[in-house]
Length: 411
Ligand SMILES: Cc1cc2nc3c(=O)[nH]c(=O)nc-3n(C[C@H](O)[C@H](O)[C@H](O)COP(=O)(O)OP(=O)(O)OC[C@H]3O[C@@H](n4cnc5c(N)ncnc54)[C@H](O)[C@@H]3O)c2cc1C
Image 1 (tube, rainbow, N blue to C red):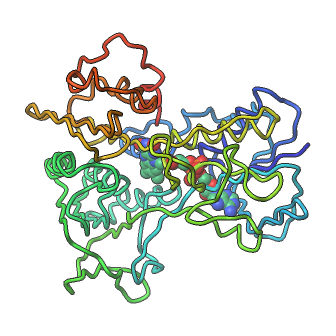
Image 2: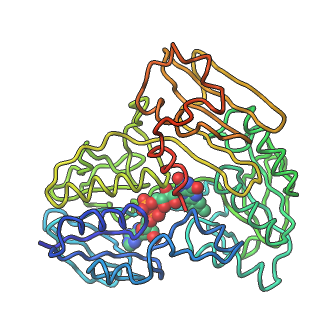
């Protein structure tokens, strides 16, 4: 049997490791268009700040030890499920018995001029190297970050650490709107300002401007902002171009069943490129975070080597490391009952919906995150413990290490 995996991110790597637990014989080919061995994207900021090894997540001889054929710098341009083959950019054709699409996501910048050279991002290691090299070489002393979502915040903080003057614009009225409620976001904003990031909310960029190369960002107000480095952190979008003409169904992401199979025979998909149901709400959408990619890689890997496994659903969770104040947000940010407690620099908020813990946001003091997370994913009835949920010592000694593991193993 021959298995091909497209993409060497966390989803693809975990699929390989899962398969190899059961089967050392099957021929596995892993293809990535990046010129690197597998790395952990969440570890990139630490790598550039502290010089930590990006590949610590996996050893450098990982591919060799796993007994796979690992091919870097190879872009897959098409999938032809009827003939069980893929096509590379240079025309090479490779047959498969089973295929895993783990192509992840890329920067999405819905602004005029976004295709101009001179616009940087932090979505891949190549892009990050390119950006940081401009700072290290002394070419860039100021930066303008468009977008204050999770990745935008990471970039802004990284650049401050590297001594760059940073302005950041966000069209919404708060930072990290996809993940944080307004109160928690206001604390995150103050921290960003304390780090010296000049954040402008309700400031919408409409165009990157420049002659041949971008040299400014035009705002809705007509004003043009300039900086040595212009950075787009406006969102991500699954890498789906290779599906064109394949007949493989996708909407915002690839559509899969509970075994992570696509509608094409012997083709599976996992990670940031798929749409999956939410573990808590059941609603299907893109859940582009690291722990989901790992779990989906594991489930796809199990199914591909003949151990039928159901995917239970994706989580919504994130944490921000370089803010100088720990933040963890998980699940929903609304509910029919809201518990909130503020103490100095700490804010703990818990959202309850129909007596179930639907989500929580912890800033400053993140104790009990593991227990809250367990209650949330187990959909436990919290009526009898509701008055204790805000206590940072709640559930001390309870076995919640599994949940904490998910939160702390991003890098
Ligand atoms: C800066 C940054 C910080 C992050 N921090 C966190 C965090 O703290 N916590 C968290 O949960 N998540 C975080 N994430 C998100 C997390 O990294 C992703 O959810 C995870 O990497 C998704 O894994 P994946 O394997 O699906 O895809 P990816 O990691 O995107 O890997 C997919 C790979 O496939 C390659 N590829 C795509 N198309 C093709 C093709 N046609 N041919 C060949 N190769 C192809 C891509 O180049 C890429 O190398 C962060 C992401 C970034 C960028």
